[in-house]
Image: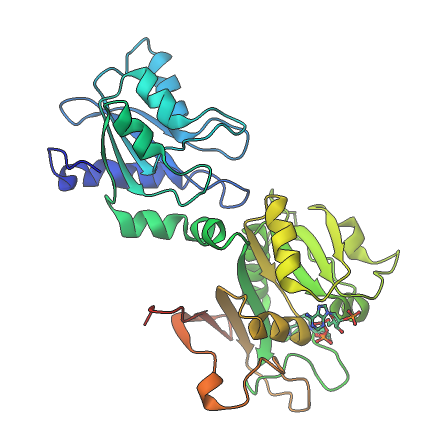
Length: 349
Ligand SMILES: NC(=O)c1ccc[n+]([C@@H]2O[C@H](COP(=O)([O-])OP(=O)(O)OC[C@H]3O[C@@H](n4cnc5c(N)ncnc54)[C@H](OP(=O)(O)O)[C@@H]3O)[C@@H](O)[C@H]2O)c1
């Protein structure tokens, strides 16, 4: 990477704008949110673009197209992009090449693309005489597309594990009933979170016990525009009349106990994030396999006692094996407490 003048600080404001417009793209789907602004010599923004999802133009292309639509040239401009321009031909051509052909003289980006195929755009730009500068507003750029970055790096979807429990850590009463441990506000958050993931996973027992719809519904009752794929995992058959079979996001039955393989299969079909909704057996199996990136633990103000603990065997028999967590957020929602936590990764404390 070549250091260029003016220094990175000169691009902070433009990168913040690129990050802001990137957030207009969808959080779901196989592609990350990306924003791009084009600057003239005076550092003024002359065009903007962002990615609106798989199959649509990438942010750089939208910014170049918006410029051309006004009969302006990109020659000598600086492109400020939230993600290193891609190097591969997918549903669209490589952005690095498009920027070279358009005549931009510099490309400033926030986050390097870890993709085995899509990465390497900066090298193409450099080889073609375009100056590059990476790492500008890197923390914010990484945070924006963290789920996608983790997914690309691990070659499996990002996994959010959610459960609802009583204050004494029970996810159901002794007779198996579990509706409703938490209140309306928390349930509204769960529905919103469903709409912000590519897929939902539940264990077969939850389907057989509760026959849930698992749709993502807005507070006023309508469906959110994005519905996740509904995945049931387990050997037993899903009944023909199970509501989940008619899920508007599609239905998939993974007749296996192999969680890693299921995640890998989902990744292969473009799933970059999953929302695991239990029950306790599936939640525990994901934890035991250390396949969880974020935990959403919602606690209702009640006690249930009895044997239905929120998690069971998670592979811990002694303190040294405990799953160590970082608390990301604690808030109250209605009468409930919602904890967001992340398993510590190596070197993350
Ligand atoms: N409080 C909450 O947040 C919440 C959320 C969801 C459900 N629930 C409640 O939880 C109860 C159901 O939970 P549950 O623990 O009995 O069942 P579950 O987790 O829904 O399903 C467990 C089943 O999944 C299959 N399975 C697939 N992969 C597995 C793996 N890697 N390891 C082990 N089993 C695997 C097994 O069935 P096969 O033998 O057929 O493969 C297993 O019996 C219901 O009462 C429901 O109301 C509570």
